[in-house]
Length: 160
Ligand SMILES: [Zn+2]
Image (cartoon, rainbow, N blue to C red; front, top):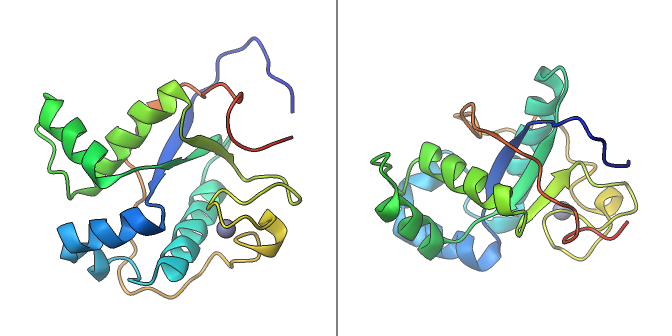
């Protein structure tokens, strides 16, 4: 994949790394009503939802953006949108904001032999890649509203 001159827009999808997920669940216990508590299961659910979203989009360009609780709270406090930091909308807006800088965004899907977006250290094909679209959870909710962002530079993140 090489960069092109034409601007493309993408969706930024927020996810919490393991230590931040633990903190997020403590901060917003309601999260476990829509997502698995165990981080490995949570990551699998994020992957499954991303696969389903990818299928519904005609020209998908998705970015996985790792977020942190303190940054999310700070973002919402500074935002004029009146965002509830525990809401999916807040996570989506924060992820889109981070994706514009490209610092924590990884394009999805990774190459089969590239490191997985979830930072397990394993190749995508041996980690989240095989996760089926349908992971059984009771209440699927959209990962992100229509938050469109410019794709970040790929200077950071997955090695080619
Ligand atoms: Zn993974």
